[in-house]
Image (cartoon, rainbow, N blue to C red):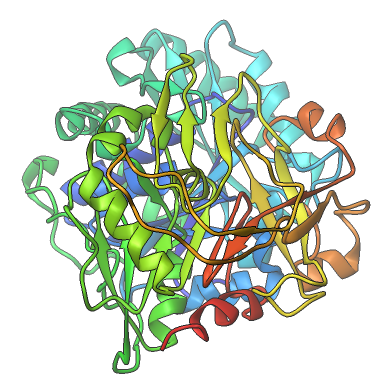
Length: 516
């Protein structure tokens, strides 16, 4: 079923080293002048940006829950570059999904839908013959998943690898493709929502090249195109020497698809504080005739005058509270434009930025834009973590009532004062400078959220209404079965769930219809 050659790099469990190895392989293959691009299974925003730092092409999320099987397969086909090999990084363990079902939710399911073979990453530390039993279990658990190779991670050296290779190949028939050493310098730093984003990592280029050199030394790179049924017609660089790094990717104007001539201009908040966007959502906006331009709440002095709408995505505003507060002119500009009716769609961290203030993980409180008369604060635990069904409530003015889609929440923030509908005649001034007022009815809540009851049903898999693998099943199982979320004022909406506009375009078009 795969429209272009590719393979899925999956792991036995979370933390086995999939992302590190993905970056090493992408760079090592790129050093051989092999045309390559990548995707990421699941809803993660951070890993794809690391991919892009290597490949120079957009990395797309492939999520069977949020997109549905058919839309996911179509998206994969539409965004593949001719002549490129595609590496799809998995999520968690190969068969891990929500609860105990992997159908409709796991890396294995995505591989089946796309017709792609799987290369399995195992942690070889402390193993020899037992590695064969491990691989055999993964090979046999779902015969519809084609396990095409094994890479052994975090071992001491060649002698150790040969022991594992002999046992695995003799007892399972699955080829071992190489190994990676246990090396502390390959570790990617983490924070409370996963890896520290690529945009913040200093010396990332040097770190990835070091990993790529290790991959070139210990992994049989020439076998990977064969695993993916790829015919390489590009000349190889001598001895896999590093190639020049790609130019910084422009996620707003790349040319993987044909887009109509733009008729409106949409600003996208994009800097170290706000950068959680699905590439397919940015593409969807361009398909609606939107020209996308980046804006920075951290560095810009004001919103561009010619904006017809603003997209405020998630990110880490809590890590940049001091800088966001200090940029008074931008906050005043945004506040004023909202009062004038600028259509704004804000997700997660962007929603928090629209509140009066934000209290970070250290208990420090920073002034935000004051668009909503609500207080945001960070907590020590994940809130409503995982996939959820999203339904627009009756009586709110922003979305058609009763429309549904599937969303994902992954945050530690809460927004308080969400339980009322009231008239906002005057907002808190920004640093006492008199930000003006936003007159209009503030509606809260806007969305009803609930956990799915049968994420693995056939109907769920076929329509995209199933739920997939949350990375902490216990957190999902203890979550409340339903809750409400979101606020609106004028033409501005803010809420915590991240959604794909493809799944139900009514959510995105409700926002865009407010443009003048």
